[in-house]
Amino acid sequence: MDWSALSVSLRLAGFTCLILIPIAIWLGRSLAYARFRGKGLCEALVALPLVLPPTVLGFYLLLSFSRDAPFGAFWAEMTGSGLNFTFNGILIASLIANLPFAVQPIQRAFEHVPHNLREAAWCSGLSPWQTLLRIELPLVWPGIMSATALTFAHTLGEFGVILMVGGAIDGETRTLAIAIYDRVQAFDEQGAAQMSALLLLVSFITLGLVYGLAGRRRWARG
Amino acid sequence: MGWPVVGGGHVADLHIPELVAGLHVAVNQTGPIPLAAEFTCQPGELLALVGPSGSGKTTLLRTIAGLYHPQHGQVSCAGDVWLDAERKHSLSPQRRQVGIVFQDYALFPHLTALENIQLPLRHLPKPLRRERAEQWLAKVRLDGLGKRYPNALSGGQRQRVALARALARDPKVLLLDEPFSAVDQVTRRRLQRELALLRQQIDIPIVLVTHDLEEATALADQICVLHSGISLQQGSPGSLFRQPRTPLVARLLDRHNVFEGEVVSIHGQRRLKWGEWLLEVAGEGLNAIAEGQRVAWYLPPSDIVLHRRGRPSHGERENPVAATVSEMVVLGGITSIVLRVLNGDMLRFDIATHAARRNQLTLGEQVHVSLLAEGIHLMPEHRAHAVPHNKRNLL
Image (cartoon, rainbow over all chains, first blue to last red; front, side):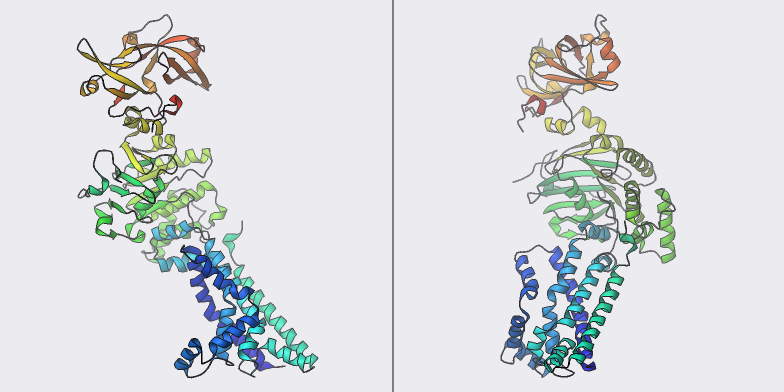
């Protein structure tokens, strides 16, 4: 059993959710409410990782993470270290690869909040922030939960992008999914089976917890 | 392009009357929704904005609430200026202190009835909020239902929660956007009665948006008629129904009997020539109009008196007119009658069904009616017929 791979996987999934969900709430809400030229373009950009082969996405990320590329150079300037084959590198890759899984459910949820509920809240004296916290977020909660579940589960299972950007450095970038592949390559079927079962269990528990939380809405029952 | 407003001038030119106790709204813009409206509503008064759909009623309501920002305009309430577009001054909806009941009530589905009503009370200390919300719940006769979520309430109950939520904020103006349109008729009647009762307890301007003339007549002290964003006339229901300012107002208020006549002089006396009839008009109206001028005029159906067969009475000397019965529709106790006059115009009025029977009215028969001089309302400067059934709609 490769415990360090499990730790990398859980850390990666956890941090991805922690960073991505607030961004997705902001982005999803903006896309749901705003009407501007090029909105379709923005939505297409967000959805792109969904249809792009992970190796293609990984390849471009690899290029832009290199110190010759503007982003890689900027990162190196700021932090003093590179991005390729580091945990930070696969975290950024994971944030981008998961964008559609996080944004789309939240955007749909915001689109289903009737516009006049916000107006009713304003007319009840609630500031835009209070309206977001007390009215909008409770109403889009199921969307946020399913975005979290999808992001978490998808990060645990992500393979191609991580492999391209991170390789398989023990304790740094070797996730459980990659460790399983390594074991199969090394004809260690038992090790692969154990880790597969573990990944299955973790995914199932996570999804169960998240959907359980999302389901606690007395008011939605007809 | 300027939008003329009844009373002359442009709304944008108007300055806000100082120290208006009630609500004063003047809005003017050419697009995207053309608006040129002005109205006032005193404290304790209920003003109904009526007009066909797309006439800008809801937009005006949203302007008052601060949810819509017109290019030009002013809104002031209880001495405070809420909007002055010229000076780029506009209070946010939060600071305007309006109570608004949306057409679909816009209750927060994740909050109970009580929590919905508590939300606008957040300026109070917590224990007081609950107590106050319970009081409001009792006032709209929903005691005991506070723990229910909106989806477990009937349409009428939801409307009451929405009303309580709007009033809980101690608003300076109450805005009602078609509040009775989403409930069945029995509930609607009951809610209308409750609103009429509730009004006696609150002393703020109330603005009701409705397309239902009956509702407006029953509930409102003042009606403002809107068409394509333009306020055409404001007045009490009684005065509007007797004296619409233009043929268009008459049409929007579902008034028939709008005709066109010519001002003539007979033996030094002014008369209104209508077909071959020379009508007397009470008051000084005719004297103010030049001879030979054509004017539109209107007669309320209540001022058309059917002569009883073989029993001449006193009023029959007043503007007697001969006509043929061209339509008779029995609607329960009331019979709606359309008479065709020689020049082709149609007179419409209602009489009690038993009276129609007693007079043995039949289609195609010739009858006589008196057009009461007191009721004839002249609309100078307006010549065009705007009555759809005359098919001479020149507007």
